[in-house]
Image 1 (cartoon, rainbow over the protein chains, first blue to last red):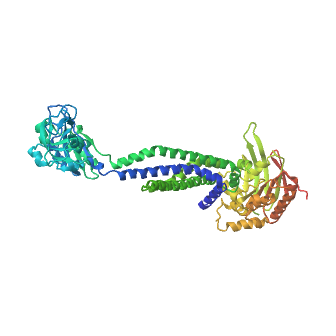
Image 2: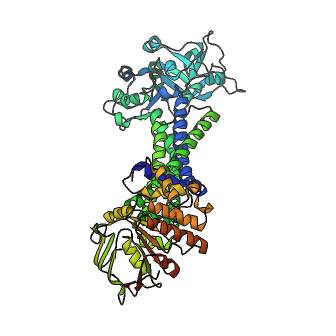
Image 3: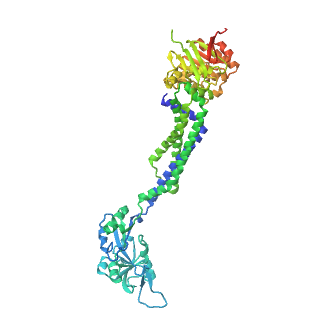
Length: 403
Length: 228
């Protein structure tokens, strides 16, 4: 018996009962469709999220420096350490800041002028930050008025200050060309610039802060070592810099530094895919199992119905393996049909979902090719037992009981 | 002289039961090429067991069975299936036609498990149908044929490939008188053409048409003269 004859016989067997075959195909169809839609939509959506990933937040890395465990020992990171960090490939800009914290409130008393007016509140409790000169570039800050202090101000220990937009408003300072002064803890600083109210993505708190050169802050307000290092990396280098920065900053104490880096886009995509997949893959597999049971059931019923045919085929010289092969091919074909239809429907569904959401559909080729194969495998597994039953039948019994 | 088609020597078949059932005992029978033999007996006489044994569907527990000179009792299952497919044509009481296939397809099925190519199979199937007088029904499905026509399709299927033996099990059991006559006439024709026929029946009318008659009773066979 040739393969083509075997296929003809199996197809004729399936075609003899089209409605039953269609219902049997349905189980595998639903299972495969669910799997293809699940995996396809997950891949598409995951890709979508990674695509929308904000390039700005993807390049910001924050290293938080805890105070040294022993107050008398040197700090984990000092102001000069920034130079080592900036030598790393992938660092676009970096700045150290120290939040001045004297009373545990995180704020110091700040006022705009020496005016004792009992009817108004002139003192504001505002956070005061000591920083290196490169801060605006790192936090994407704009300068609304005046300028930011530069390395010259820093090295000269100039008594200058830059206000966040919120802080300037609170203090009533609207212009810097008349060189207004602010008093921080009763020490006077000349305001040389006001930050814009956009940007500041790495440290929103700067908006309401008074920013001083770190040298001046150390002189006048006993500011200590940096408490935070803010880094702007090149696109794509964030996760690498997140690993390297602590070592560059503090070779001996890098374990103690806490790094806040944007999630890796790849792992983010994987995470989204896993979230979506978990439940639905289980659903798809369950429907596949149900489909397999359906095929097994129907094939078994078919075998029982066709006992006479089995007897006849044996009388015509069919061996047991011919009988087994015929029923196996029938169930594999049913599974394959289900797989083909299911993967087609699944792919269409993925494309439709993508079109509705304006996404780019992402389809794994191995998914499109593997789904029909999976269907055929389901059919094969489901057909094993019925085919064995059919092959084991004794021809005498089969001829007697069947019509 | 060539080998006889069938040669049974001391054939026995015991079914394991308590007590053991001797369905066939010491059966001696020779069927020559071109013979037209009927086997008659009441139900339970061992008729079906003899048919199954002759058709290589059942294996005897003792004795020897030569089909076309080939000893069959010690053949493996697969070889028996092949011998069965190539040397024996079966005609059943229930016809055993596949309901969703045309008459020609049903006839062609006889060659499915043989080593003949499929190239001219449709022509051969049509020839076989023509031989039983049903050339005009080749494309019909069995449910559109009368009982007699169905049985003749089954006979055409059995004739395909020129088997050494046509083994008929109650071929007229499901047929009315007119259809029975037409099938028996066909048997006469085939016999005249040299086909070896073994017909198992409990119908005396059928057995009277055969040239030899064997009666089976309690597993033992005895040849009876046929009154012409």
